[in-house]
Amino acid sequence: MSRSRYTLAFDMHNMVPAPAGVATPKVIFKSEDGILRCYGTTVPSGAGYAKGCKFIKVDGAAGEKRWVNEGDATTAAFNAEIHYVTVTLTTAEIKALKTTPKVLVAAPGAGKAIEYISCYGFLDYSGGALSAQAGSIKIGTMSQGSFASSFISATADRVLLSHSGAENDDADTYFINTALTFQLNADVTGADSTSTLTLKVSYRVHDFN
Image (tube, rainbow, N blue to C red; front, side, top):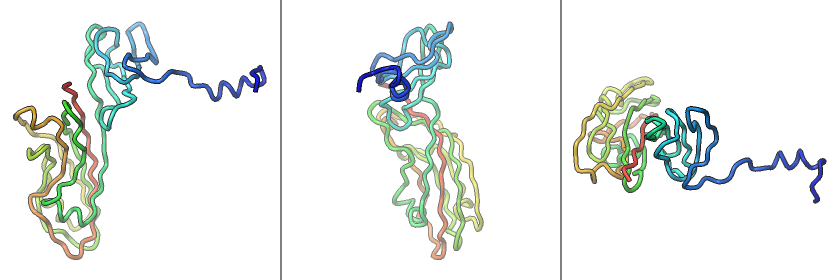
């Protein structure tokens, strides 16, 4: 079909307004303060990016798609924004959390580490109570946030907020490329229980490459 003024609306409706992301960031919006929004495949560094500049990593994995400049226009320092994940456990999964910890955030890859921030837990009570057992959010075997035993054994719907309160120091190989998991100190029982558990986790991924 030849192009004419009669096909202009069709052409504009179907046009792609920007090229694909590449290693050198593409600018979406810029002001006198510097670049405010950009995208690409490599997290920016150097000068020209305003404080608070948002970068979209178009090929980023989970937890690595949105970045913000926490440096200044002279020396950018892009850090991953806070990310969120929601995981729901069945009754059977809750009962087996000692022997089969639940992965909340998968290992992020070589040279990267997860920073746990907080978790809201919601126990949707049903059928009967589970036995009391404490638990924790972990990176490897190191606890990052705790869950009281009374939470799992509640006899009604219950909400718990867990914050990171850990200070861990170990070989870099321990934290790098290690998953974030939820685990109980022992398996729980509760023959009549059909309760489920929903965990809403906030976290960051740090790239040390």
